[in-house]
Length: 430
Image 1: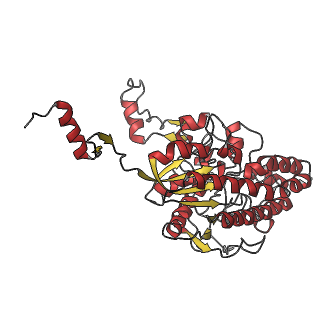
Image 2: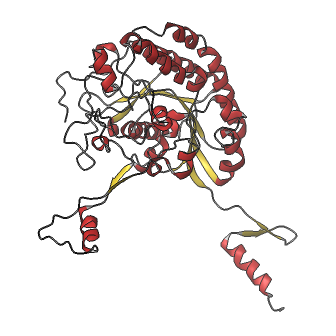
């Protein structure tokens, strides 16, 4: 027998470990290792995690916003005491220990790279919450980007990011065994940002934003065609893979007139819902129309659809069954999830990051959407056909993010005003 050379010994060891295998000619070639099962979120700010910095809202303008700003982190009392013991001894006796040190850094929420771009992919984005909170056993991979339009998924570089479908094709598909793709796109093509700005200006001058309304309503069907193109491209890229694709709608941000607690202009300004109530009702109706279009596109492209337009009912901005953080609440004593608003309120003129966070799901809302996604994956993973569901609150006595439920949609989503969650009028805010 010939002695084994070091190279031959190494090849045999690698082959035994599954890294190498032999061809019929005896040549060792590499064999791909198992890919980690993953879920991928693609699209715009409503799925990237925009707004996740906040845990409810507060009228107060002090530094920590009554504990609602998750960018703040305070050290523990023990850390504060240790810091004090390592300092020179005070000259006076009975000197109280120093207060815990608090520091603010939005990168704690949005990450160093994505905050700089800024795609605002937060640590509580829908796929992240589905994994961490709802315990969906798939690796979260978030390539969505705040501000993205359909063209930024298809062919246009955006905020130094390659087109999302290209990233899926050239990087993620090889790295992961993608089991689930969840897509939220179309709002920026319609001009949501312009709508909010124009309706705010109209509110300020006591008018309605009729011109913007007409423009947006006329674009719904054309945007539907662009969404269809995105889905078709994703399907082409993922051909041959065992995965599920879910298109989702957008959640309503501001409570309608019938459930809005801010009845005066002063209250609307202080509580962050500076849109005339008639315009807010119209925006909810537009959201329903967009959801109907998305549902139809999902059926035409044979993908599943998750409608979240009513997911936050009872906890929208200025809802009469929700409130903002009050005096005495803080990082250590936070407003409850049941009582808080689940959307970031409107900040029309502020720093770029704060302004773009306006009317997006905050960390509580993102957690709720994570539970919705887990429930939806449970419906689609073993189904041979696409399915359509609406994600809603579990009922009057189930108001936490973990209490979400799915209701089957056999037809296009309901028209405006046809569905309203029964929130008890005597619901106690804690």
